[in-house]
Length: 161
Image (spheres, rainbow, N blue to C red):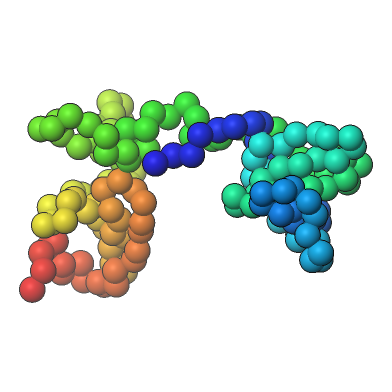
């Protein structure tokens, strides 16, 4: 279940240190500052008396406005314009065919693609494979994982055993 967005999100453009806060009271903890890595996504960012308070990976932090301000930029999700279904989501009506972003791209009109994925049916859903030098690229149909399978002669027919 996706978490509800509660405030603005920012992306870290250079590494900065932030002070961890107690999750319930919001009081700074007596521990060393934690580095916020480059490209980290800070959520629910708000300014209170010259201090930015925010959550990172679900935990609360704070950092001085003079330090964090120049080191963050508003975050725009690169997948925002793509529907949940195109991202490989499985929320659909019973009996409706599964069309993932990879399958939709393969079905698009226009010139023949330079890189073609072949669908393989399995007892756990579909897999996709592509013939590449030295073997196969194999990925889940929703595009969430990919691996290389060495097969120099491309003898694998897409079946087990």
